[in-house]
Image (cartoon, rainbow, N blue to C red; front, side):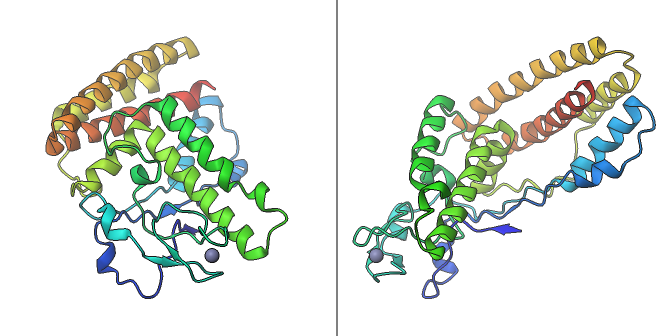
Length: 267
Ligand SMILES: [Zn+2]
């Protein structure tokens, strides 16, 4: 299922959106297949479940290279109901008839939340902004509305959740920022050997762990590395050192996977 935040209007060329982020999120995330797995033994079956879970999780967003040009998106849309002009892609309601508007398929998630496109963000403030937006867009508010309004509010609300999750996750936020600045996060074949050795070592520790306590210890150490990597990313992004940030993101990605795996095993 492809989630579309904003449905692109027919009179707008693709090119005119070149500075706008295109976010395609695949929510095809299902654990139902996990129930079919036979329990072999505690750890093995859990590991199997985990690798299956990973395979069924697809989160993909592709972006163009530059931050959004806010002037560029003025007057892009007409209200589907009264044909009045919607001046900003952040306006969810028509200023004249107040009908909820269909989502565009391309947008900048920082702009959506009205925050600066930086790696370091105030999570409390973000949460506050998210709740404010949801207070306007939650599908429950449209129970008495027409089907088309219900549909728009559902799409907006779903995509808002997805955008919020990206901004909340340091890894996804970093990946998003890299793509926004023209650095691919998908074509990274050259993995640093030291990094690989470190990751393999931790994997071995996880495999050899005999108890939850041991796993918790590995997890705590890994968490420290994650925090360290996040701090370094804050520095690198603030200095616009994207190439170095890209390497650090690869590292953070490994650490995050390890953390998820341990979390799954010690549940
Ligand atoms: Zn209208």
